[in-house]
Length: 263
Image 1 (cartoon, helix red, strand yellow):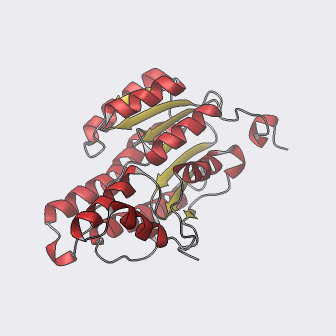
Image 2 (spheres, helix red, strand yellow):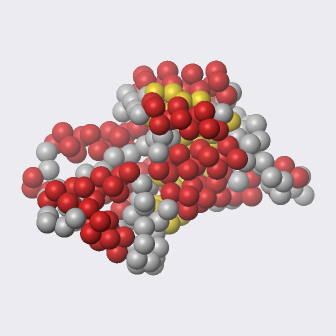
Image 3 (tube, one colour):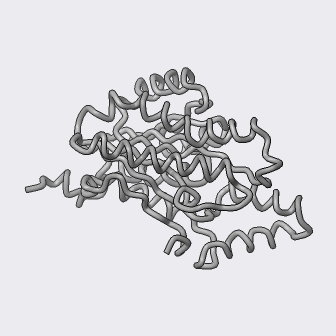
């Protein structure tokens, strides 16, 4: 029989647990930080943009740690700082990512390298460096923020799509490798989300076409069958679901939050 902690029926089911979130300064990462803190977790946020993270850290009582996730040694240093502040890592949410769009024939190799380094190689480094913590204790969680682009193709976004397919493959492989441990490994795969990344996409469309940014945002929202952008809070709620003690048998899943895009 599950005890009260395992059932997670009380408010604050994450009390005392250390959640480390990359890309925690805005969008999905910030929403996840707030929600996990509300459930009692100790939160560490890693990312390049220090000031937004510090503002959230003050708000929730967390730790804001500047870090370039494409630099393995920087991740190692940041993890040490996070452990010093909040103890061993219990929930690792690898959320940092970048996007770009251009015709494949005009995509520069350094653009491909930058996107792969941020969206895929950083997952390898981030997960591997956290393994000593994630394989000790119970109800440990690794959640990767991937994309519906990891489940299908998309024109004019080959590096991004390749990186997200790689992210999904990494999640499925690690889920099987560690299936007999107390660590679960899952992905959330959002469609177009109302975040700064989508703002940047709208700006690129605006610059490349005669459409206004508002029209560009409407076009992006229309790519979700729901006709609206997904909210960052909706994605964060799915991440919390995967971190909950009662989700311990969910591993290797790709939870879509896309308004029906992959239906």
